[in-house]
Image (cartoon, rainbow, N blue to C red; front, side, top):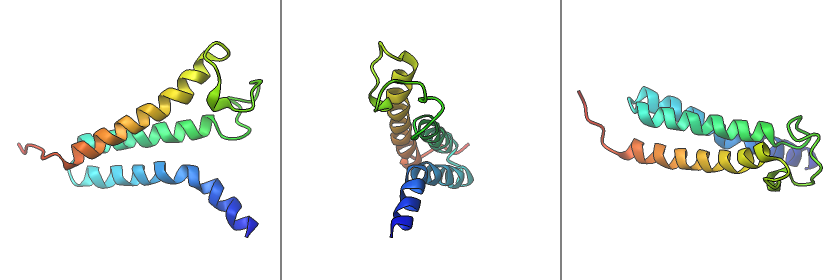
Length: 108
């Protein structure tokens, strides 16, 4: 059971960005180019966030904090901007992608 839980928590953070990338491929094939681009960018932001802030990351290795996602701007400005900006941008792009997907596109 411990091994299953370990694999679950190892895969879980990468699952949603992976699904968004697959959905971007489907949207591109269906002709929803704007939605596909926004889904792909959202997946890229999710993967970047996970790769920068995973436990033992080289990006956060020298930080003197127990919680790199709650770092103060005065301590590490780039870390603060990335820890807060990437999830916000990811979620806004995701919402815009879904809105663009369900919006009727004009055919030329």
